[in-house]
Length: 249
Length: 280
Image (cartoon, rainbow over all chains, first blue to last red; front, side):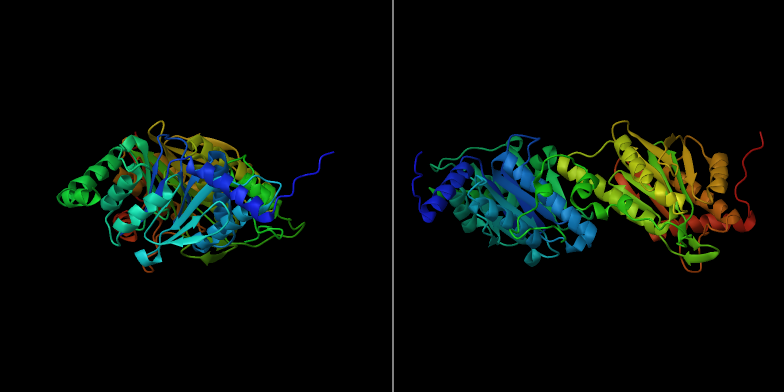
């Protein structure tokens, strides 16, 4: 018979948080940016089948980093929650705020229940509104807190560095190609400051487009369409590239 | 929402249990009372409820059209003049329903959600056959109601992305499904509509001709069936026509359907029985 060691509650929580954070930091990042016609999601993800960005409902989408099986479970739970709510009441009654709350409660309960291992995930739930002011972006860290974000947000490994890079450069009213270019630049920066080049094949890109005529505003940007937008972004920003480059160096 | 959060506020287990991609299966597990098939049926007496009437469909080389009249009847009373009975099911399919209007609308809502749910969870759409089979199951689960006079009989049409052609499926009250080639009709005026379709249908119709064809068929149905509503020019109530091609579904605008209806009506002022087919 061995006596269990005493671990202070603070230490236990700190250990769990550390465990979850390490798991999350191992993966590549996802960034979410507002642009003039909606919200764009960009993830570095070579897989075409295992998505990090997905549709939840008409105006709501989901992005996640961390352990795939865990966030996939949460994603399906979210789709079920949204569809059930829309079926019970009305499609307009499904909101990102409601969904973010449910996710926060779920993550929070799992994080603090001693019997379960904490989820190694960080989520983003975004909803596109009728105008840019009505867009909502919520970031949900592993411990069940909710952060209401504006403009741009990054989660995953290296998120702090990417966030500060985005914060400095993101402005309201960017076009899709400008926002996409900024997102790709931010993802391409490594921890040590060196840059990689990310091609269309390595990116998973989706938008919530408020101008889309269909009821469901979520759309994946694939293949040629994505390539065209990437080219457009780098083409139009060519003149300012020089000054920006020297600033960084 | 009604989810039981049992004090902790987290999503209950059925939400996070991996398994079926079907919304109906999820409902059956989590809230079975919300499924139409789990409803208590009254044991006796006849229920008076509005009934929708005629739906027609026809295929053409680039797609398929589905159309329905706008009348709902309750006994010998016109319950509603402008009811909508033809709905998009998803991007590439549509469903038109004859029978008890209230149940039909609920069934369509659940069917649309079933397709959308599958698509979101799996990341790909069901095949057209898969969609048609799913609808079959839903009709079959309504058999108890149908026995009491509350039948729902749909017509399902869609663009088959794999085979690159428009296809039409008809159903009976027991959920029996059969694929129709060329054209189909369901509802009280379907006998007359089918007669018209049979005489006017050709394999090489254009999209514009196909939409005119279904409007002609509905006109003939309304001519001989009191429960089917003809186009109401005075109130500007025209049939609902949906066209599905490889670009997805499109519902004709009021202006477009009004133009077709007026052209048909104009000709019928001269020839009340409509266009005549050759005798031999």
